[in-house]
Image (tube, rainbow over all chains, first blue to last red; front, top):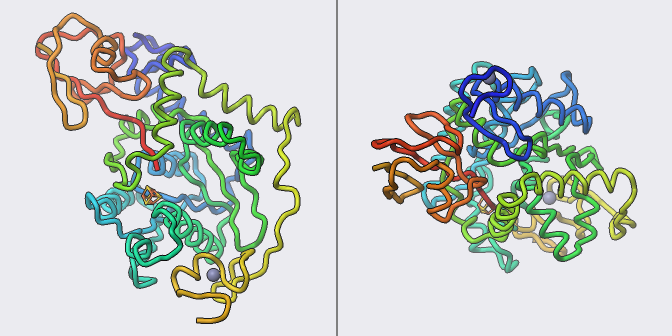
Length: 311
Length: 63
Ligand code: SF4
Ligand SMILES: [Zn+2]
Ligand SMILES: [Zn+2]
């Protein structure tokens, strides 16, 4: 197969775009697509300070790389969760540090949960009596810390590496259960609803997972290939596999499912109730982040073992 | 023969088939892997030659 732009040997064929490209033109095309997405959804501007949540995986490191190449003011945030299985956290931190060494001028914040709060995420999950799966707790910790660092550092937005396949898997899951509240909120941009809750943006939301992996490989970004051990058997992987079966038979299905959903919402052809009355927020008495729970936010309840009636 | 590597598995296929065929025969999806030969990404229509070693990189991650 030949590159559509220059006729050289192609390195990737994207059936959904009917487009095959060589290395040079693929990298150019990919970066251009991401910049278009940033502008199309008015995510942020060149003057805004952006915090990129990096995990050491292909998506977040590729995203940071693209934003730096495009000249955005993008700093990284790595949250060390202390996951020991498969040396996941150690290896992922190594990958992030290697990336920083190869990108002069890249600034990285590291938040180490165990150092800051005394216990790693798996340790918190073990002692927590909330009966929640570790991933729910992990999500809670990551959200809280991302918001904290973004607020303290005066960042305009947090950018995450969610790709099209991630978004489509979530959309599929939410549609299967008609979770209208989640469907109402699913978007490339989540505006800030409070000064301490950062704006969240997903510049890769239109890029196929296969494309972000190809970008990382072609750009020579060394990323962690192994999964977090707790991701094994997750429903998102099940949905991704199902959707890829569909994509294989009918290229472009994933992209059109997602884009037509966004378009229909934008045109108000569909609108979801359920998010109507926004619940009342008040500051957590411990950390100050807004919460709907009495006195303390969910994060502080776990970390400091707080209950409504005091310690 | 052609050697195919995927995660911690390795197997052989006959030369003369395309990468796409080798992926499908293994029960994998073109959409879910990226084929690499001699350290370079290749397209699925590439015909495999005797002695080729192709690594299939899984692209799906979850969580
Ligand atoms: S898979 Fe679960 S535990 Fe692992 S990083 Fe993701 S949310 Fe955290
Ligand atoms: Zn080209
Ligand atoms: Zn709190």
